Length: 153
Image (cartoon, rainbow, N blue to C red; front, side):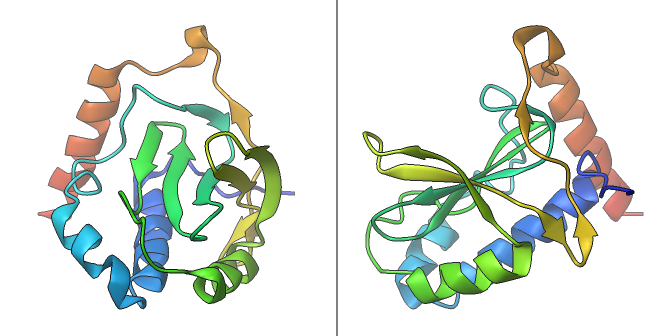
């Protein structure tokens, strides 16, 4: 079986755009979306790099998608969404991305969900990168900037 290439930043941006648009349906996160520039800055290589697969961090109280863990690190979806209840939206996203619960963090009030497919194409099981498998922050920043530059052509 051929798996989706989740190292492709364009694919990751499409998944993130889908998540942001679904959760943006709820007006209570609009202020957070407008004020949160971390999405536009790209992935943060300091945290949660994967060697394969994708994980979605969900706030257990609000059902909001907080972060996407990728090969390049964590990418903020919604920052600080402390108000609102997104269960209906989460159920749509869960069905669309074929989410499967990966791990609970009750002390932090979050859970991780494996994204199993995107637009009908399967995604490999998630595996966190070991310290020697991690990309440098410089490499991640350079890769993201090159991607953004390719959009301007």
